[in-house]
Amino acid sequence: MPDIRFIGFDETAYCDNQANVKLEGNLIAGVFSGKAVTGNASSGYYFEPRLAVPGLDTVYYTYTTTRGCSRQIFKPLTIRGAAEIKFTVQDTCFSSNETDSVVFINLTTSDDPVVSWIWIFGDATSGKNDTSFLENPKHRYNKDGMKVVTLSASTNYCESKSYDYFTFGAKPQG
Image (cartoon, rainbow, N blue to C red):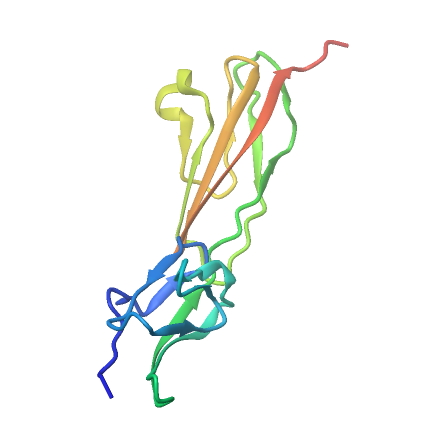
């Protein structure tokens, strides 16, 4: 019976938002399996972290000879839940006075504590003020219009990023 081994599948922990990993073994006729394993021998096998549940998971690699003898190895994995990024704004209208700012409301959830936030407000004309590291920041827009706002959150293990479009405009005059 030949020795079997994973090739290039070295990590022991994955975030559930990481890209798929192509699974390869040293024997062509080997078969991969597990809760988060997809594919087949002709299309290739992949470990898809987004299909795994945070906690412990296992990927198996099995080789069966033409005589029906089989050998199986496995790789235990730790799956970390990445932050689920969600946010909104308190109001899309602002006045032209210098103190009126848009308040961003961070609705992000995470099993692991978030250790850093990065907001990009889509307002290049504001220079260094286009970025904030606060959990729930405010930003003063100089011009109305559609803006793409991006929020990134990092835990000790995972990084997440999401964006949304907002159309900001002047407050109606009464």
